Image (cartoon, rainbow, N blue to C red):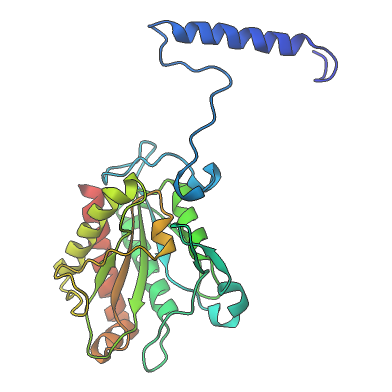
Length: 283
């Protein structure tokens, strides 16, 4: 066969093949086949490109993916060097609702200086170990606590590209010292089907897992069950797979700060988050 520029016979053969395929597709017995040139896919919501959206999500009801064990993306909030790269993390990125917000932030810390970024990453690593031992595939949005970023829109894109069965963003709050307890945030009002149903179910499973582990519900938000639906978090707004953010506790509360800074306390939080995720996946 000649090279691609040496003859016009190959284009004619391809055109004939497409006509044959189209004719076959019209038949009842071959109704499920497709031509060689499929129509472009419908653009995903929120202006994300098909590459950012990744494959079609297959775990919206908490079940296993079609191609193997479930996949969970853990997103440990912030990063260890964010404070040293303020120009980068303060740039504006889409928030999923037609506006923009800061790429990332430094996070909070205990009064003794233990950073939220370090807590988030340490807990995420432990959750990964626990889930992996249960046969769950796990990816992290960052692999260490020494860099900066990624931006919140890219964190959402990581879960979308992977077609994750669940995305859990791990954080700790920094509010009045008298406030305590965990709460779970999800995007509301929803922007797509994953947010409309599966993300809410993931939030419920996560709250149940946290309370089953003995962690108290936040006493400074409106919900008695630990839910905080919000429309301003880009990482959740831009997600096309089930995604929630867990505020494990308040780093400015002395008792919770001590727990978060201790190995035993971090293991407790990791156990609780693992309970929530496995509860969702098992439904």
